[in-house]
Image (cartoon, rainbow, N blue to C red; front, side, top):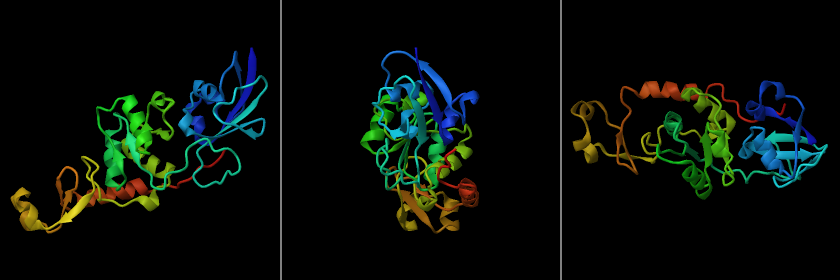
Length: 254
């Protein structure tokens, strides 16, 4: 039986049992095992890993773990330049775009409220999520570690909170999205962009009370739904402020 020493850093500890968090621990193994497979067997999905050091040297996911190796595993860095070490994830997206699994519908609506590109359907299976994440260069958001462990997935994040409101704040913080926030520019139902329209052009689609009380209207470029800043607008503005409050951005390596 061979043994290797592991130390996981920062938010990667979320995936470990309490006794293994923020400390080095030994892991016994036998046979020929890649470091990617071993890390995932310990519970950490590979898309959340940015850098692996073995005995002080950076390696890729194909490295075969050797008896006596000392392994340090780091999460995705938002602002730290790790050149010339070997970055394992793909190049960061210039604009963060997301695809969400079937259990994160409320989070998808909240991200759209913030103006973020968030694809969601409640009938996507795991294979479709993985395929579209790669083909459309989207970050896959899920609470299912198994989805992120699919070999095809290159960009992904396991949402920690089980509260949709906290999830929205978590995603804003994790991906440092403050500068990308543009509220009320996407359709909450389908993710399409909203375009301003003249009241007269949508007159026959408006409730009678709305015609007299409001003068600013928008139409979704995808599904055609009509929006206006009605009585719910102040509540949605407060919700946006809540999502942005306390969002710090960046990773602390501990």
